[in-house]
Image (cartoon, one colour):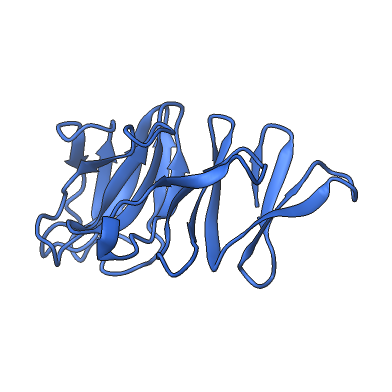
Length: 181
């Protein structure tokens, strides 16, 4: 479930239909269909999620709750394949998420626009590296506009990181032996 303003959004049991509800039976219906849809998150009055259509792979989508207002916000990989956006977390100023691109699994953010959807920092450089080993849940939370998250960039395993949404403001905080959960 995700709520945006006075609407509740959810995914149908097959994982392919996106529904909205205003809290009434008449106001509960499917408004968009995909090959797969997941990761519903509200941010600045809009719904964001990962979805795929027509074998294009999962990418970042945005919706205002109507068929005409539901669209691909940004294809992070172009023709290289699905970026699989996941682990969405909204702060006041940005919606953060992890995605798998030519940089590997890394931290991204969006302000809700195509041009404002950018890689925050290449935390673990190299195409076969990333902050995640694979598509998985990553712990994320925020205090104010500072994002705290679990990521790895060396042999220490997953550690606590923070980011203000800039490369220089993205830093590892912990050095826990064997990593954190």
